[in-house]
Amino acid sequence: MPRLIDPGSGDAITLDDLADTLDTTPFDPHDEDGFAALGPLLARLGRNRDFLADLAIEELKSRCAGQSAANNYGPQVFLLRPPNGRYVIRANFWPARSDPVLAASGPAAFFYDMPHDHNFPFLTWGYLGPGYWSDYYEYDGDGDDPAGPPRAVGDGVKLRFVERSALECGKLMLYRMRRDIHVQLPPDRFSVSLNILGQHPTHPWIDQYRFDISRGVIAEGLTPAPSEALATLAAHLGGGNGRDLVGHLARAHPHPRMRATALGALASADGVGAVDDAMADAADDDDAAIRTRARDWLRHGGRAGSKMAQSSADVR
Image (cartoon, rainbow, N blue to C red; front, side, top):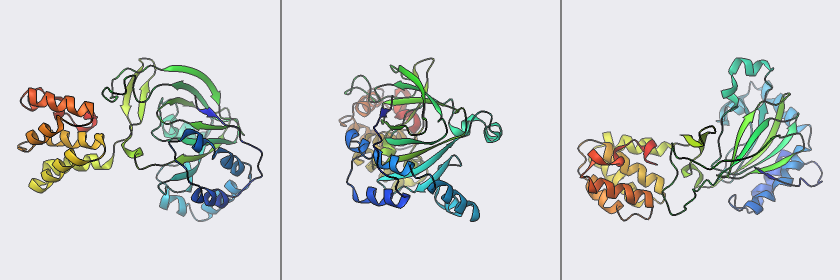
């Protein structure tokens, strides 16, 4: 389950204080201990009982102009500091089952009853109310065999149930990337949490999943990157220039997910003569899944017998 953190006993600080400290503090979001060490700062903001209400009042006076301009998360999230490549600060609202907003919008609008992991780590603090409930599970997000192919939709996963608990007021936790799974459930009363999300350039390329708990399988990928759709569009409609660019991505992009997507785009486009050359290069790719599928393509003489002709969503 998420790592419990001692919140310390420091005095309350302002949102600007927290942002200024994060801006001047070097940290790696993938260093669990280092990122967890920022938790007491979030707790100190959480001890400020006025800042969030003051911000909400100002937003209401401006007809939510600030949130409308910068918040891409939806109405559940009050964005406190927008993404800057290193972190995001936000507040999340958690209505109870009896609250009218949940009856009107339904549980999916608040990500209730949806088992999922995260492709980024984040710190969370119970700011108001008894806190939303979660059924917590753990799994190995990198697979049981690190040298084997990456996980894909439909794959079985070994889920270990840990407990059901609530993020009550004053509780500080670190959600670990690609390890903690939770099924969020409505709180007993309206609640609010505060988050610091760690950001890294690799995160858009790391898969986040929804799980089917009853079957113990990955049910859905939740993190398509915009460039994946653009690569398929370029391969199909971009002529020689588009195919050349996608071929370059298939050979040279630093992330295997994009290389696999580019190969799939080439394979799915009709009349792409360069695909065999790209597959021949991919047969020696550093990524085991790409090597296997490229060799499958070459062994079967093209799309008739190969998985590479599947959509980019299925390729990786």
